[in-house]
Image (cartoon, rainbow, N blue to C red; front, top):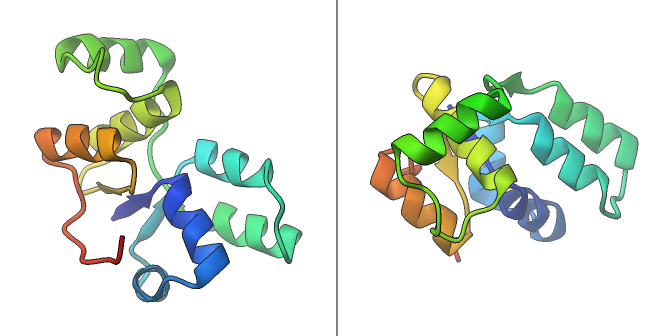
Amino acid sequence: MILADTSIWVDHFRNHNPDMERCLRAGQIAMHPFVVAEIALGSLQNRRKRLDDMEALLSVRVAQLSEVRHMIEAHSLYSKGIGLTDAHMIAACLLTPGTQLWTRDAAMEKVAKALGILVLLCYKR
């Protein structure tokens, strides 16, 4: 499973990312509710359909805040340049077996690579 962060979704909605399209058609994309919420805060064409389609995807396990805090300490993720939503997505990948993270955020990418959850997918930057 692949958990795509908000930046990947925004790029897909703006520019139709062919890698994202292939992954969606193959049923490889999972969803975190924070990503749907972040996308919902923006301006969308076909708003209701897009949000409904995102919410219909397989869901990752959403970590409790205490689990995220534990993960931050256990993996020394402080001072790495990631935010709380990023940390939640990383925790979701760690808690949902076989899930990898797809991001364009440099700090998040570095953390995901160190934790062995960075998606091995070729895509344009």
